[in-house]
Image (cartoon, rainbow, N blue to C red; front, side, top):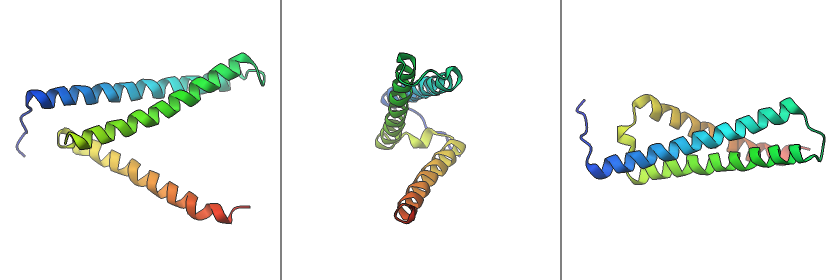
Length: 114
């Protein structure tokens, strides 16, 4: 397989993509840490600790999702998938397929739940 030479613009695009990935990883770590602390500390209902950790977990979880979507769209728009190893592409497609399957399952089973 021939390796693809990267132009300067592609290197900049790849660096931006890496930055977005690291931001998504950081947001996921904040969400996970907040959630674990929320479970471990078990603050009283309505306390400021519970509110702070809950909001931090929720907002960073949403930020993780938004950044992950941004990464996928940016990689597609800039045609950066060709530089990704095949294993990463397979993992991404598995996650996408699982997300679609779970969404469809939820839509199908929701009207029948009581």
